[in-house]
Length: 104
Image (tube, rainbow, N blue to C red; front, side, top):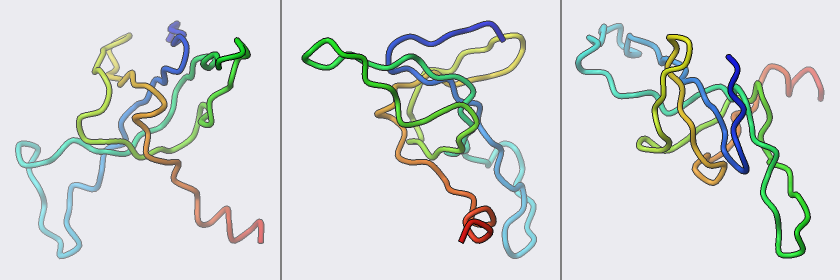
C-alpha cells in the first residue's frame, strides 16, 4: 500500500471478532456488528501546536487499538478495506497481556 496519511490521521485495518459466542452459537454475517478493534497500519507525522512545533502521535504502526463504532471513513486501497480516522477518534491502545507478564 502506497498511502501516507497527513497531519493527525491514522490508517486502521479492522480486526474481525470471533464468529461464535461464548455459548457456542455461530453468529451469521448479516447479524454481526462491525468490529471496533483494529490494527494501525500507518500514521501521519503529527499536528503543530501553538508555537508551530510538530507534536508526534501517541499511536504507531502495529498498535492494536479500540475506536468508536462510527469512527473514521471507510476506503478501499489495493482491494483491502481500511479506515482513515483522526487520532482523537481512537479510544486507546490494547496492550498485550502475555507480553506484559513476560516483561514483569
